[in-house]
Length: 403
Image (cartoon, rainbow, N blue to C red):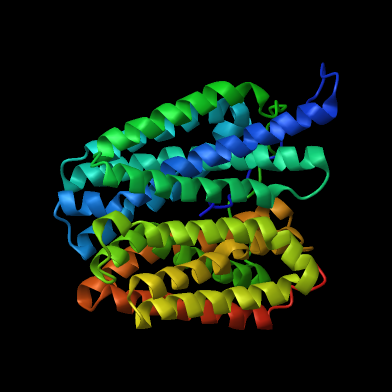
């Protein structure tokens, strides 16, 4: 998952004064921002790749793991107002150079957890710091995009997805080398700290501004709610892949220990590919058609993994799910930003609040269904979310092929 698209405060104006070659300068800035997306994705993927090991080490049931997984998105959700204020007051580049290594450092606390409550506390902190990273890096992404004068945001999220694939491969290597999660996470922390040190000077140096005060509540818009539900379904599927794909391969597919992360890796690499070709696909077949196909991919991918729980079929199914979720949330946010009744920032806040509930509620719900029946039934429910995406995209007028 790319980091969730989060509404950001008033954008920081890029400053390129003192640079003799602005083209080279903005290219270096784009690389630096991409690497911060990569670093954050690497840390998150490292946690996801070791969930089965941590679950086994703490002797957690599916329901217990589902409850603990709830702590991470809760930490992200409750920190949104604070993170926005920090970015507004101090600038995204300052917040990011502190939050990025701190995010990886908290990751080591997850590996150190020796009981369920310690894991829950570490995941809550992971969510809190992760949200600060999300808002800061998305603010950087928007500022860099303005500097270029064309859409490059998808490539940033593609960098996050590539990091997910890389993190899964590193996790596979650590498992085969019998390296525990704690030592594994410290290796990632060193890499993220080095990345921060090498690239923080090349972030967009913004002008710190104080946003205008606005009302806390604004009347909901029906079209924005529809977009939020589409995003909710997509992010529920992403949550199912991020938090449960390893457990699914271990318990349902019964893959060998050395291949447990194959499902997660196949999902991440296809999601990354989908994000890098997404703009091209939209130009070729239109945004509405692409999202209709995306919903069908989620349904088909989940369905294949449920009906044929073997390594080959489940891997192919997870690949389809990766392609399916790749462009949905970016397209939903793009459509929300074009709303002519509500300012773009407010519209994005409304849509993200609804959509992010999918990431918040999806993983715990999967755990509860798995406890009552089977993890296969949980994935069947997520498959139906893909059909709902296709149906709602077909009926909504705010997403069009001409966009």
